[in-house]
Length: 215
Image (tube, rainbow, N blue to C red; front, side):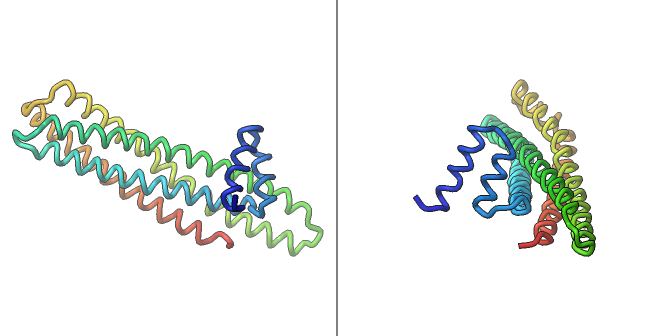
């Protein structure tokens, strides 16, 4: 088995057998992967999860519009499609939450290690430069973390509204119900549009943070 294929198996074994973050880091460092590399990967994963969630919310928005555009059409089919998009969006939101948690874990560990290692310098210039770089990186990360968490928090009320729409339509799948909910559906569509814009802003910020990290 090639080293590239062997590494993920070794990492998985280390995590499963120990459940310890420090063992994971130690194993990664043996393969030349430092915490800064892990942070970059974690940010990329969080960004990618947000991109997938944003696309899923776009799909849900499309289905929602189609649902309320029908006029005597196949309500059951459109309902099933909308329900499926909601369930997928809910799963993607859970993935985003996990990726953000992972990202914060690695960032916190990296900054703690960095802080400790600055104290090991005897050269004041090295210590000062390292401190400045740490502060700059931590500030940029804090801004990124706040942005992704704000976008993540905005998903919850949208998902709640979508769920309520799906449940109501499940109980009242007829033309009259569709007509009575059109106003509410328009409000949800606007909320989804704002959410997507917010997530796209967070994704751009993640890209900028990734570029700022050393290769």
